[in-house]
Amino acid sequence: MTGNATIVGLGMTDQGRRLGIAPRELRRQAIDAALADSGLRREQIDTCICFGALPEDLRYAGLSPRSSFALSSGGATPALSVVVAAGLIATGQAEYVLSVYGEAFTGNAPRLEQNHGAAGRSDIGGYSYGYPYLYGLVGPGAVYALGARRYLDTYGGTSEDLAAVAVVERAYGSVRPGAVGYGEPITVADHQASRMIVDPLRLLDCSRPTDGGVAIVLTSAERAVDCAGTPVEVAGAGCGHNITNWWGGTMVERFGAAPDAARRAFGEAGVGPEHISVAQLYAPFTIATLLQLEEYGFCGEGEAGAFVRDGHTSPTGTLPTNTGGGQHSGFYATGFTPLSEGILQVRGEAPTNQVPDAELCLVSGSGGNGGIHGSWAHVALVLARPR
Image (tube, rainbow, N blue to C red; front, side, top):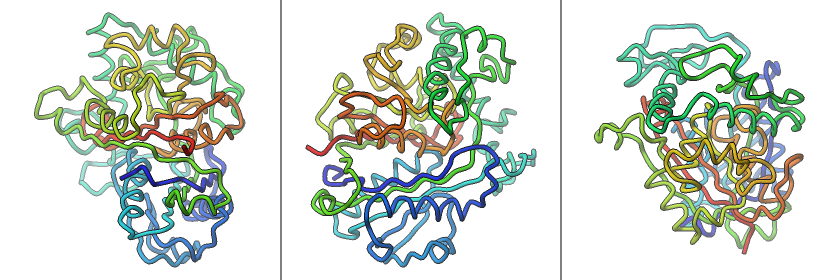
């Protein structure tokens, strides 16, 4: 169903800390940029998929779609919105679909609230629902740390395996203007000297919240030829859900890519991990990169640390990964961080770290603090240059 869906517009605002711009305005700016990129008029957008947006945003942005709705699957939402848009386009329910995100996470300091099941954006209660909270764990770092500790103990790894990921992703971010890590490369020694947040995760294993907006426009391959934006084909997609790990008692063993999301995405695209040119992974913590490299089949179980240390994820490696710095050292726009960089790479338009001949890009999205590496739903996309 995804084979005919094509991304024809990408709009991004500045991404950074304390931008001083309201979320609704960030969304409007991203929409403006995506429409300009696609060459489409506002009235041509017939469906809007909103992430963290309110109905009033449509009027504020000057949109009048036939349908609009909110989609909520945590950090998996942006990639999932691509799957939903592909279905709407394939079934004739939509011609041009806009998916938009915009948040200002750094305007107010989070405060610790009792878990009441209806946490707002500005309090940390939103991170305390579900299984982790039942056992005294507050914040996504705590549940990712459980997965990290199991992984290192199981495969004889050390904190330096995590450091290798941080160093590579910061190297990418250090040369990307506007990235949170811009101009600040780090070493393994820097990583080891950073303070412990929740064992074994140190400060330099963790991403930082940022403000910003991102929007994309999708349509069919046939209509894409009339759009201004460089087209990016959605060659394959797959979804998975970690509730199965709860029933199987494997909550801290998997990130969620394997087996369902990865297998379906590669199957739809007719490719395997060996065909992927570049990867953009949802990884707010360094352990998430290691786990996904293995679950997607880029290396064997317990081999991801060596895979990164040997340079495979670096600019000259076999699988450049999180080339904009990722969520760790680029910016944090939930799943729009890997998705936007994936689009830029396939287009050949990345402002830095452009991978030559990036014909196939794997993009992952993961979200929801279900106590399984902080991940609940998982979505995999294979983006490609139109064939």
